[in-house]
Amino acid sequence: MARKFLVSVDLNKNELLNARIQNLGAAPSSPVSGQIYYDTSNSTMYYYNGLSSPDGPWMPMSGSTEVVQDIIGASVLAGTALTSTYNDAAGTTTLKLNDTAVTPGSYGSQTAIPTFTVDAQGRLTAAGTVTVATTLSIAAESGTADTVNLLTDTLTFAAGEGIDTTVTNNTITITGEDASASNKGVASFDAIDFTVSSGDVSLKAERIQDIVGDMIVPPNTENGIVVTYDDTAAKLNFDVADFDVQLSGDVVGTATVTNLASINISTTIQPNSVALGDDTTGAYIATVAGTANEVTVAGSGGETAAITIGLPDDVTITNNLTVGGNLNVTGTINSVNTTQVNIVDNKINLNTDFTGTPTVDAGVRVERGTSADVEVLWNETSDQWTLTNDGTNYHEIVRKYKADITTTVSAPYTFTATHNLGTRDVTVAVYATSAPYGEVEVDVDHTSTNVVTLTFAAAPTAGAYRVVITG
Image (cartoon, rainbow, N blue to C red; front, side, top):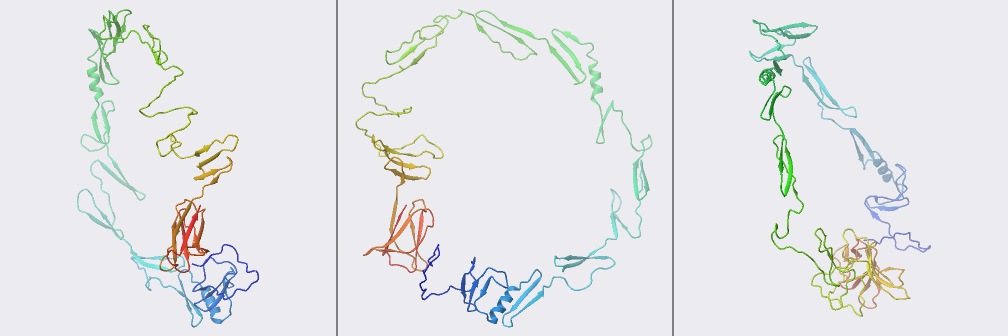
């Protein structure tokens, strides 16, 4: 791979020796003004000026007839429905109108209508005919299906029993006759006695309900039951009078039974009606007492008292304390006032109660009295371990990756260095593994945040060079 320069190269008026212009079989993509190349297809040097044809954009650096003809030939482009053909030997360009799929001839007759499809260039791309219909097929619920010649026949609508037909101004009107004792036709029904819907006639239930309702006149009361007729709802209503249920004695309560529904009676135990030990079974606690300086008890001994059991405000353990389970200490500061802290675990886990997306930095700080504190800190914003020696300025802790280089056996000769440092901000150095161990220049691509790709002009001897990546 050629060496890429991201800045201009200033030779400071020195000579460029043994140089060669780029050789291509076609113009390079995305050119800039002043760019040049050597076209191997016609042995001509070109420069780019960015102008429109025929003054650009690529202009030959020689004026041969062949070059001029090729420029003109390339400038003629065929539009829609046209074909452009350039004859390089003759130096000519021919434009031809493309053929369509239409067959030459005449279309249409007395019984057929011609149809055509025309494209945007005005060419006929399809042609055909459509036959004109001259007969109409007719059918009915009974009888034999028939046809009507639209040019010679007359279609007649005949009326049956109870039906009249008339024709006026090209409109046929079909109406029904009134029904009679001897003629089928249209009839009406009394809305008081009948219901008619979608051709269905039925006797109204209201007439029957009113007859039954008249049997309950006037309303009667029999042993607390009242019977009435609801004409609107068409229902007989039986109503039983409400009555009370009452409890008395040590437990009292009253409830009213409404409409024969279930009841809930709220009962009350009368004062001084239950005696502990006489009216109850099992043991009961009369008094609760605490131990001085260990457990406190408040409110014991009264009939309606609430008992509170707790620890004193300050608890002091003068001897050793062994906790069999986990020890959770809540508060702002947890101070350990000992000469030495021994921790059996080989890891210290900070910020253990945090969940979700991390936002808080964490680290280990050393208090140095009157001098500035020092600290090793994980910066959550940059996702980097940092270090400060003055308590103010934090710098990233540099990590390093190193490996001997082996490349592919054929071009391109590359070596993939997977450093896994998680950033493209790394420094790459390649040096020889034998004296004098000098650094060499190779193409370096920061392929990803974890990979650097090295490319050589020729395959080096395996292990002859070593790469060191820091970041």
